[in-house]
Image (cartoon, rainbow, N blue to C red):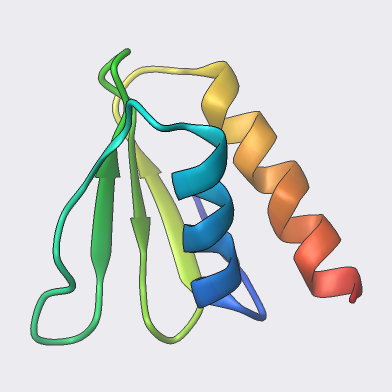
Length: 74
């Protein structure tokens, strides 16, 4: 399921600060950053604000969805 984030850079900074063990890829040609968590969950953050989730169910997905809601409210 994809969601939309109004400030993808802010979301990436939040993920970096909150999940220091997550591995971040460099942005690809279209600006997508892939974040892989130790539990195998993957979050893709696109430059246009689209955020999608891959892999098994994880509490991380719900936490990131909550953070996107906070970002979109401000």
